[in-house]
Amino acid sequence: MRCPYCGSQETQVKDSRPAEDGGAIRRRRTCPDCNGRFTTFERVQLRELTVLKRSGRKVPFERDKLARSIETALRKRPVDSERMERMISGIVRQLESSGESEVRSEDVGLLVMEALRGLDDVAYVRFASVYRDFREARDFEALIQELATLPVKEKD
Image 1 (cartoon, rainbow, N blue to C red):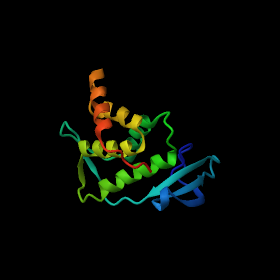
Image 2: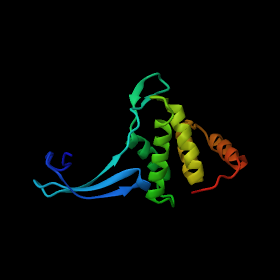
Image 3: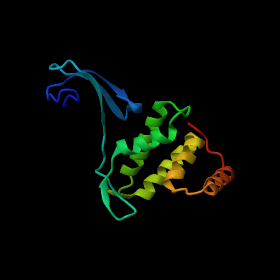
């Protein structure tokens, strides 16, 4: 693993432990060249995923991009990072186990909305406003009405 500080290829693992309910391994590493310390995560990847955008363009699936969009929706919300990580891992697992190597961006967005709805209503509305490209306050009103009429989901 390359050191993020000096670029050295000779980093050493100092500690390994399970993370994300056993779905990943957290490794604490050090660099003997610059003495830098950093953490890496090792996860199982069932298949290479490609995302088919609305424009027709195909791009490689990026777990980090998914995580950033979810983190943005959950910013300043009372949801701990462990629950967020479990949610992200669950979405990725669903995508990988679908049997398809190509997924539509709309399907990814729907999975995120479904997961956020079960986690935090405010984050759900935030994400939906970007995902559905809200233009007016009326769009928020319609979503909140929709949210109010849906059956209450059990939260983790």
